[in-house]
Length: 434
Ligand SMILES: NC(=O)c1ccc[n+]([C@@H]2O[C@H](COP(=O)([O-])OP(=O)(O)OC[C@H]3O[C@@H](n4cnc5c(N)ncnc54)[C@H](OP(=O)(O)O)[C@@H]3O)[C@@H](O)[C@H]2O)c1
Image 1: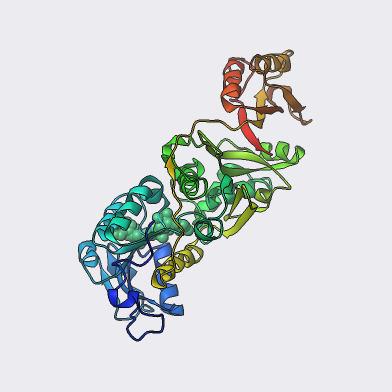
Image 2: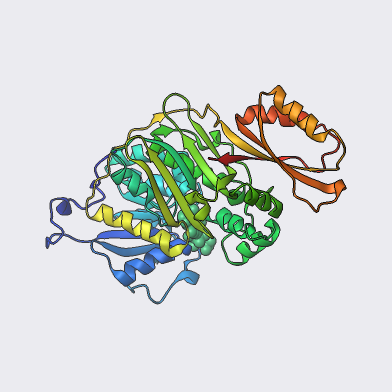
C-alpha cells in the first residue's frame, strides 16, 4: 500500500501544513449524481469540510440533475473524457457497476489522480489490480463506503484493528435482506415485504443481487482481504438466497430461541478458507439478531483483541456519503493507511455447524424413520424434532435440527431424502450460527 499523498495532491501542498497559505483544497469531481453522489455534494456544499472543494459533476443527461444549491462555479458535464482530463485531483466514482465505472477509475488512476468509490462490485472483482495501479502511478484508491455504507468497518480494519490478527468475520452486510427478514420476523410473508421494500426504495425492481446474496458476497470478499488477509475471487463463495424462507420458518426459529438473518461469514486460521453467505438461524441473544430494518452489523473476532462489533446504517445516501467524504478528508489531510498484505487463497473448507431442516409432507407412517436413517448414513446426529400442532396431515410441517456437520454431508443425506414421495416441497436447510 502506498502513502496517501501522491501526485494527486498538488506538489506545493505535500510539504504544506493544513494552515499553510500555499495549500489549496483538493478539487473533487463527482462521477454519478444519484442517491449517494447528490448526498456527497450536499455535504461538501453545506458543511464545507476543510481541504476539499467540489469542482465537477459528471452524469449522463446532466441537465435534469442540476441543483440550485450547488455553487455556480461547479462544472456540470456529460463528457467523462473532459472531466478526466480536467484539473480535478480526485475522481469520486458513484455511478456503480463494473463498466463503464471501472474504465473511468482505471483512466483516472493511470493519470495519477486519486479515486474514491463506494462501488463494492468493482473493488471485490478488481480492487487488487486497481490498488496496484494507484500505487504505481502515485495516486490513491479509497473505498471506505464499499462495505456497510456509513459504518466505518474498512477504516476500522485499516487503522484500529490492524494490530490484531482477525480470524473470523460474521456480518449482516445487506440492508435490503435485513429489512425483509426483520419484517418477516413479525409474521409477514416474503412477497409482501419485498413489495414494501421496493415501494420504499430499499429494493431494486430486480432484487436478485440483494436477495440472492451476490451483493453480500462481494462485500464479504473485500472484508476477507482486509481482515483475514486472504485474496479470494468473489465467485468462489456460493451464495444462498433468502427467497425460500417463509413466515413459518420464523415461527419454528423462535421456538428454538433463534431468528433468521442473512449472514455473511468467513474464517481463516491457516490453509484453506471457509466462507459462506445465506439465510441462517441466529440466536436471539446474538448481536446479529438485534439488527433491524436496513441496519448492517459486522463482528470481527481477533486472535488478540477478541470480538469487535460495528453496527449502524449500512446504506442510504447520507450515511454512505459520510464514508465517502471521510475518505476525501483522509486524502486531503494526508492520513496514512496501514499496509495490510493479503495472499491469494481458495475457499476450500466448510463450516461444521448445526443445521435446521424444515420439511412439509403429506403425512404417513415411517417418514421420520426414513429421514433418521438417511442422516445416520452420513454420520449426522439429530438434535431435536419440532412439530407444531394445528396443521392438516396432508400438509404437515416439521423441523429437524442436527448436530454440527458439514453442508456437503447434509446435502448427500438430503439428496436421498428428496426421493421420498411424501415431500410436498424441497426441504429447507439453514445453518445455525452458534
Ligand atoms: N445507495 C446506497 O445506499 C449505497 C450504499 C453503499 C454503496 N453504494 C454504492 O454507491 C454507488 C452509487 O449508488 P447510488 O445508490 O447512488 O446509485 P444511483 O442512485 O443509481 O446513482 C448512480 C448515478 O450515476 C449515474 N450513472 C450511472 N451510470 C452512468 C453512466 N454510464 N454514465 C453516466 N452516468 C451514469 C446515474 O444516472 P441516471 O440517473 O441517469 O441513472 C445516477 O445519477 C454504487 O456503486 C452503489 O453500489 C450505494
